[in-house]
Image (cartoon, rainbow, N blue to C red):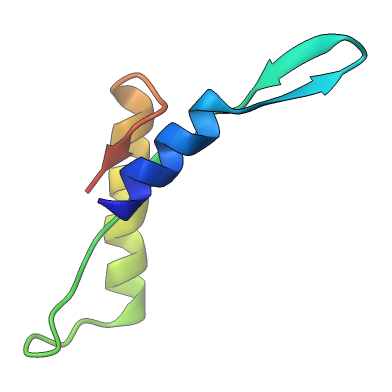
Length: 65
């Protein structure tokens, strides 16, 4: 899954600021839809938001959907 590859790449890189290494992680909530089953944008956004908060509850730095 592309979201997880992105998360892993971000996690293994770091920035250096004032001689300190700074690591960044990301939690991602994803959802999907089918053209055969229309969904409105609000419902799609709400589903992704729920998935994001699930990722944070489960320990952060992960993809849920």
